[in-house]
Image (tube, rainbow, N blue to C red):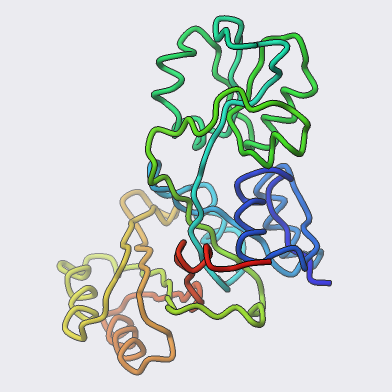
Length: 288
């Protein structure tokens, strides 16, 4: 059976993977995102599920840097999933009295999504960042009678047999996380209405107007770029690559020509993948 590595059982990654792929796979859970990647690099799993962007917090830079600098695992699919966070603990310990809470544990991105609730109800509590929401819930389970609560998913609460003390405490209703499935080969039978391509472009040094010319190569061909972001190459101060999402398949003659023109300008182009892109509406129609 196909094995897929991802963050711990009960995390948003776990919920999102089941929503897209169903239960016909073996999910291998890891505490650290580095172990998720390395599991697939080393052949222990065929694919990894990686959260790379959030509506509220933007890019997950640590994960993007792993994709760019540490591994060579092409994107094989992407999908968006709502990040609905909840306060999780023990009713018999906390009840409805937030003053009893001494510490809030969660992943830093998830915690940032719940700033308003924390400010209003838990300003006195210590905030501790954990490697994942699921690990935060597990730590609360392992430390009873300490006044600890976690911010995490309904699946996380169910997995560790804890209570939901407050449901849906995210600051915004439109809080979505973008996930990518990375692996060395495509996953069969994944077909979406849209295909996207992601590339990295590194500009030549001392070339005034290079970025403008790169964007023009796509613009005059009417190729839609859904995301452009700069990140440091980590080679030299002030040296950046540009991460570009393109709403077109790599098989397109137009896109091939645009990439060729970009390379002709002296730019380095690395294709991270051309893959099916699932909207949340498409996911909602899936049934298992």
